[in-house]
Length: 539
Image 1 (tube, rainbow, N blue to C red):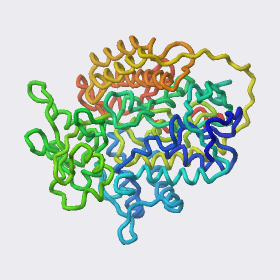
Image 2 (spheres, one colour; image 1 turned 120 degrees about the horizontal axis):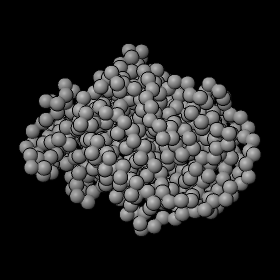
Image 3 (cartoon, rainbow, N blue to C red; image 1 turned 60 degrees about the vertical axis):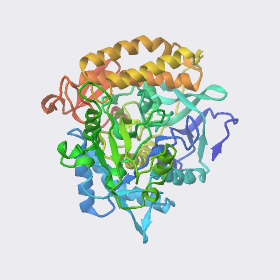
């Protein structure tokens, strides 16, 4: 049910879920079997990265051989850093979870009754399900939201921001939330972070405005471990037009035969990688970036070309086609200018395979979490599958682990800080600096410059006191996430997957075939992400 924003916030819930994308809603459906669930989202229920996922959901529906190939494709794309056990869970449990979606009325595209499959970058064969051509995330979100609204034990609260996690005796016992009525405290037996990614930390991103890293920043402040924050994936093909947003041009376009052309209208990907336009995303993104810079440093165009593809592109990609029409472009007729944009964070709050974090009572699933399933570079269309599989696992673990919360501390008094023009200016400066020095290509000099700029803008973006507006919440969290990315990127003196250091251009397996783990001021290295956490050992 949808809780009105005018209803009083409950003081105690059994389960609190932060985020209403695919991971949060799938977990809520699992949790409702054991008690009342409160799901909060910072804007409208339909506004999440799930809703913007165009290409599809990768799943091995063709039997055991396809499952094995999906596993190998995932491991290969992750550039030596995928936790194989996490990937095995993903590909083996994926078909069952997608069958659930089908049973709940999710309408994937079909032909003559059979599910349509397409292929995307770094996949060895077609295994991508899509819906309404290029609106897969929206259709999955619709289906899950319909199920959640029909469940009397699931309460959905919009326009509510996570400000802080509440911790007592090294256990998360609830959260401080910001609603239209101000700051409010909710206690919970268990809290799930399913709050998505942090693309807004960069000036150029395909992510919606809500993707400000709230769950990651709040978890780190509470003392949870985060991992692999240096690995931020830049989607190769976002629309590149003056005055236009960095609208995502799905990898499925290249799966259907789109080519990439440089300013001379020549293909360049065959000389870069054996899979050409279907190479892993990090490879394609860097190649486009290189082709987009001339000998004198001038910006050169790079184009996506589908003029040769013999199919009804407006029918296959209705959403993309409609957006491009607004800028006078037609996939079947025009070259479409593209450039990379920040898209997906492979790192996040460190979890085991049941979504348990290093703090008792706190769980994480979806893009906010890091299980190691994506390694250094996510395989195309594995993100929706991850949210589905690990959202269900999170719900199962929370039901098994949940203990009644016994609170001992006195209520805390909160002093708030509001947003300001200075905060907006500082946020723009942060995003521009992150794009310039912590983007596709990095080096020590640029990363150190980013450290200094982040320190300079800290007073405006992360002032003392608790944020009193949603904008202030987002600003503080973006600053916190930016610092985590920069610290991790400085620590990894090699190039791997989405992390490319101009001063260390080679992969160094001897020293860095490990995951970066941040807790407090320390950066350390671990062989695996999904090892049993302190929570799973001592709950």
